[in-house]
Length: 460
Image 1: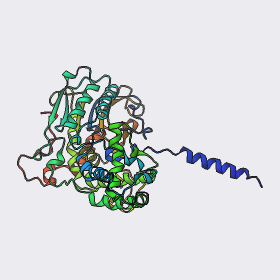
Image 2: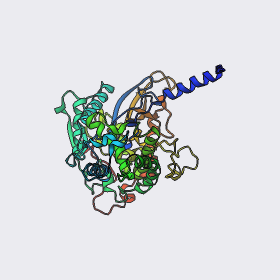
Image 3: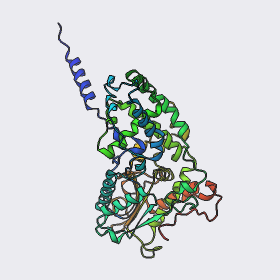
Image 4: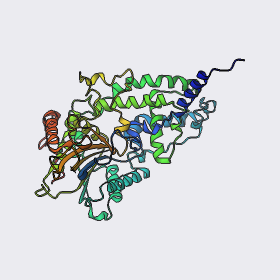
């Protein structure tokens, strides 16, 4: 028998090594139900650029991990759980033991009850506490904030409470201000989409369902072959993917996360289905998204750029607000971040997220921008960095944005250290975004009285 050539041995070794090095974490591809995580290797250094000190910052934070979103539970999880229960009845013909990957469903019990919908998990409380601690360590010279703001839902309030406990040494010295989630608040709330008639919570469902059918088809075929008497549907598959995330933050792990159950490519299909939905619902596919997100951008710019010698109201070093999953993506649109079409020339958002095939080069990946506890930070910096000063004593003022502690570049405004944005550039940037996305009441089609285009909760 001839021995294999040296070149073939090298190829085999390289091939084996390449396969062995591939790793995949399903928890990082769960879209809006992903437990909080930060990128292991951000594109840019999260530390302040050379010669820069952060002097003020503002954060917008989604609530931490909950037992289940009401829509997810009622649409996907509860129907699947009820079918599982029915399959165990004595007169059922379903035999879970005939499957290797699905046999656990013969004894598995749901970690979620209807009474626990929307409630914060213990893991969520711990993660919010840790984020508060991390933010405090990031800005050790900042004064303790007099106020932290939150929408009124229990999960946002408890997330904010836990964050404050991790952030400050004297919790009683920081007031938690609850802001109404009413439908006639105009832009003056942390849930402005509720007061915007032009926004629809169901937008994006039909588009995402198109790809859901595509990516679940082979899974359904496989499961029907393994357990033929169970009435498998595409919604069952989506519910199983979601249970991976929800069960993990409740019990610490989940059999639904197994890569023997779903392959890495199938996880990417689930993620892309959700990317389409969020893109069309609160992203660039919805013309009203930037209008909903701009009031926070404008209010934050005003807070950070206010003259400390003559501020409007009592100035804080740190402004933190807690909200729901809908607001952060609209703020990203208002800021022009994660825009798939920004460098395409055609700038056609409708071609960047096709419904019938995955776009592997997309910038809009909901798992990265919308996990539980996702946070958008805007930092004001004072810098005397080399190359950004007129003389040795000049201190410049610059701004930058971080998403989950990862710096992002504001489009057309990277004239400062570490690709930050100069004060004059930031002023122009916010003004230009206002010309595009301002006038909340008119563009939202508001018909109720006393609407406002301004988010004024921070100075009231």
